Length: 501
Image 1 (cartoon, one colour):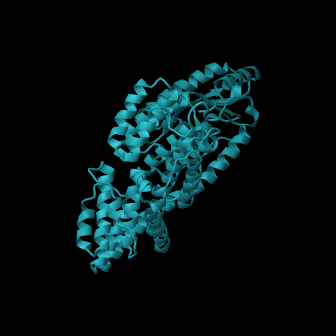
Image 2 (spheres, rainbow, N blue to C red; image 1 turned 180 degrees about the horizontal axis):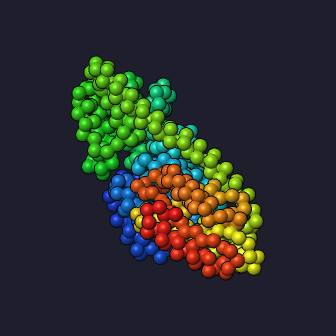
Image 3 (cartoon, rainbow, N blue to C red; image 1 turned 120 degrees about the vertical axis):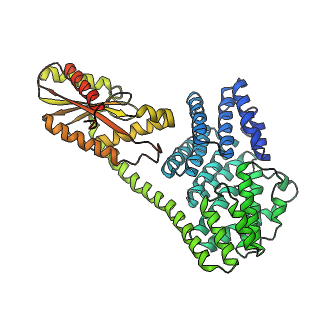
């Protein structure tokens, strides 16, 4: 990006950004598609892919449509791996997965996005936007400290290029998270800070506000009023005129419900909340919180408490998922440490599968040749994943790669230090068990099946269950390749049976 004007977005993507600024989301998607088709500059085309993803996200299209566009964007990024663009890709993907309840996947995208943004040696105005969107993604899943950190990075980067990043979205989301967790004083402080920012936005500063910033400042004002505070601004002055896209129309119902609560019109607020078609900013927790405030204003404190408890339960569930991710992260670190020790003899990259870190087919063939000459006893196993093609079809190859990596890590925990496990190709693995009987191999196969059944696949491939079919054959001094073929045939017999081992 060194030859480009780093104060602008690439080529006609500047126009797409202006559409975003004005809130004309319905034009971003079609404009992105046209730009992808005609752009001669590969960087311009790649950034247009990212704007297309943003438009799809805001339009709340089905996940499968987003996944298809994300796969195409990823292909463009493989051809043009600009760190800033990679950071933006992961920020958008994190937002989508978070709002679909896939917290672990959302966190993973944030980590990848931060690494990409920090690796950018030629930062630009697009880098500031990537940091802002990473902040938004972090705020969705309640990582308010990280959201504040990324928001600060966004403002710093934007200031370098004369691009004023206000960062109201993650700040508003953080305020709501505080309230959802029971820390209403912290929520009020953040809302008051946003209202002070709104009061400072007059003249050109108001005219240059992003559409999303106007929405958030307006909502911060009515939300503060609903909690009994004085925003000191006319929230309706900041709220953009309609008609609005679906996600903003739902947000507007929350805005009006807050206004009604602040004005003591609890029944009207409940009617508006009943009209909600989608979750608001904070997902269903915010809708429940407003319903509780409305019921309290009507004097129905028992009902308000019941709704509040449901809101707390949902907010706690997000925290629980984040805690599970920490535990899984520690376990993954241990798995990686054990795998690194097991793979210490595979230092030569030519003998290692780059995706899973296991020995590759070439390494396996060398080991089979050694077995034939050494004439030792062993059992050879062929492991083939079940329904893996369906995962690639439904969720895309990016998810398929994540599944393969997780399978490899899980399989490694089942084998001993003397065993040899290789990725043979695609979704097929081969194991060599020295000094092991065929009966012991079948017992190991049962443990492998149980291990994969216990893996939580929903965070990376919702609705999918990964299984494996295993075939075993004894090596007793014959040609090892022949024994491998026998194990392969046994695997296909297992695949057609219920046991799959």
